Amino acid sequence: MAVPDLFIVLCSGEHEKLQMAAMMASVAAVSERPVHFFVSMNAVFAFDGTAPAEARYKGGAFSQLIREKGAPDAIDLLRQGKMLGDLEVHVCSMALDVAGWDEERLVEDLFDGALGLTKFLSDAEGGQLIVL
Image (cartoon, rainbow, N blue to C red; front, side):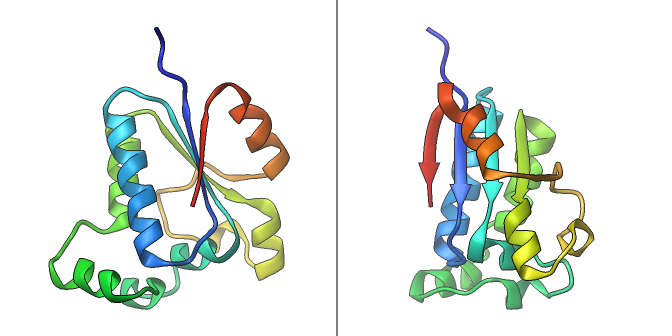
């Protein structure tokens, strides 16, 4: 039986949720499961290519532990998933509009372009959807 594609919607700007979403996406992608990752709302700010990494991540006590222990960076995990597996990363076109950003503002070498929520959800109909 074929495993359905994994569709992850990341809306939260919390470092811990971003980290978990990136871990799920990269592990699934390198395990030969197609993954579609959609970044929207507060999560967009974590992908600001003009900000240093330490300024992009906002979180609680576990966020601090992630940094102190030197856990792999969430954005690096997503890049590895793209390089080693079948992982597409899209940014919400509406979130970019509301933030007043264009795609050039985002971190380099990660996104496969902007996409609307309607298209993403339409594509997700046959897959497994996770929202963080």
